[in-house]
Image (cartoon, rainbow, N blue to C red; front, top):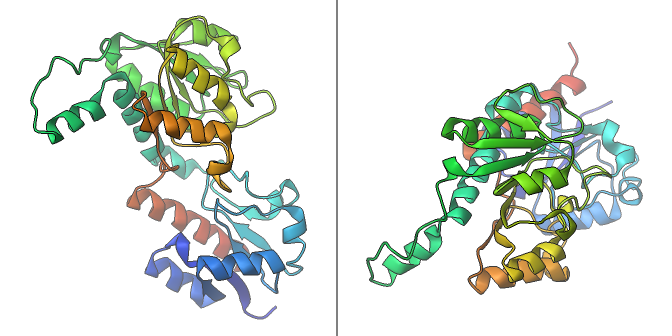
Length: 314
């Protein structure tokens, strides 16, 4: 084989050092998003495709790349890539490096603080030229809340460590993992978790059993909810209803149904943003969980190193 031809969208913003490293081995075709989308739609003679989350790489699309060897995805999961091509995908799944990459856990905790205390309203109050503290109290200290963690993988454990340091009462629901932590009580169902928890924080994978795990049938009490995992875990229409009724006291999410295409086409996603704009206790961020420069560099370096290892075995 001659020089390996790779399609790279400029929106990925890999560092100049990594792009230079790739260019030694690859015929790196760097294109803007519009040209990238056009090439993906019609196909071409590329051995490597660098993927972006906003694009769906279904089997029909990828069949138009007959020379394809690898798809590179700088993500911890690959819902945007057809399952038939997962064996050709280089991603961050299962990478031990990620134990030291913590921005998603950090964002999860930050969002929890922001919905359990009216911080945004306090900022707006001061921006309006005022100074009064009495209207901006939270219901109670986070350290005195019971916290339910859904998913006890890498991120679930990292988040548990944060809340454990505060002395929170911790519960966990994960039917696929045994929780070996005396400070974390494992429960047998999501309904049990919902009954015990003031605050629920989501860190689970998407499986058949976890799709729309969070829905109104599971809740008998008021609660706060944080989602930095996947939108599929939540029945968004139910959460909208519970926000409007007051049963859900606050929802902070870094993911929306339809985000990979256009969330504006999904009624429940539009409703969540509407509630945020109407000053309900809702925070929506655009999937920024892993967005720190050092985390990007570490994860980008991993997939580049892995690609070069596969292309140039010693």
